[in-house]
Length: 282
Ligand SMILES: C[S@@+](CC[C@H](N)C(=O)[O-])C[C@H]1O[C@@H](n2cnc3c(N)ncnc32)[C@H](O)[C@@H]1O
Image 1 (cartoon, rainbow, N blue to C red):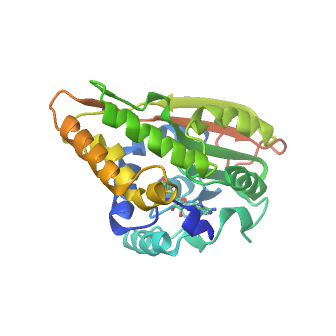
Image 2 (cartoon, rainbow, N blue to C red):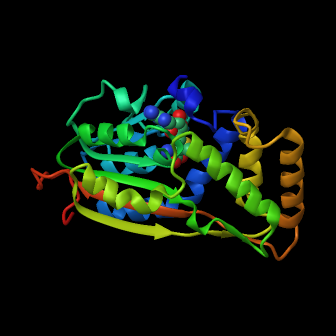
Image 3 (cartoon, rainbow, N blue to C red):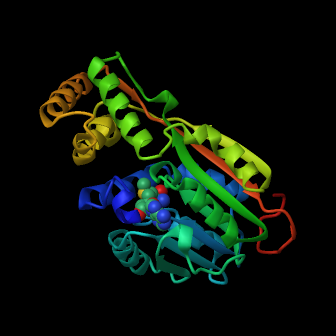
């Protein structure tokens, strides 16, 4: 199975649109992270698993015309859209590279800032991707990771279809070697990867009827239908029943959905702390 096939979400057009929407939704969180530990003018930055845009636009602005941003992704469909957005927005300092992050020929030790968002939780080989990110950073360079933890994944009032679908998707992720509680483990993983000066933060979002993310669990479960059925976790009729019941519950005006916590963790490779292109104080 290729890396792209392993990536359960695939790259259907609606999924690409959802990722762009999500990137826009989480822009304030990304800006806050970059204010804390992001690259300064002239720096070289990488967004690993950038998808159709990731935070390439934010990094492009921060490093400026004297810097460079590399967007790396394993799926050609993602990069096709990324290419057109980068051209449309005239992000001249952004270069896109197709390939598996765990096996990239990009300049090892050449980046001041290496970032990834919502990638590690969705791949079975997150350790290999994190090690590759560390290898890309220069001594003193920063690694920053944003990823979720499903600890808060509840709806209120509670509903059995919600619980059943969370359990199904959690089990699918587990069977594929992925950890739905990765968020809380990020600081420990960064420390184990040899980083120092580790920081962590987290944010939470709550949705009501009318917000596109209010129905995310039902949408996701349907997107993963083939994998859920193939793994013998459910059948088509059962999945239809659960998503139907959940959608009816979510359509009630007082039903509230709590999104997974978005964790942010960052750290620095030891050595060579004081490069000009790096944000002072980190
Ligand atoms: C959920 S999307 C997140 C996209 C983007 N980081 C964002 O926040 O909008 C995950 C992305 O990681 C990419 N990906 C998964 N495994 C990868 C790997 N081994 N190397 C590079 N990219 C990978 C997928 O192709 C997909 O575009």
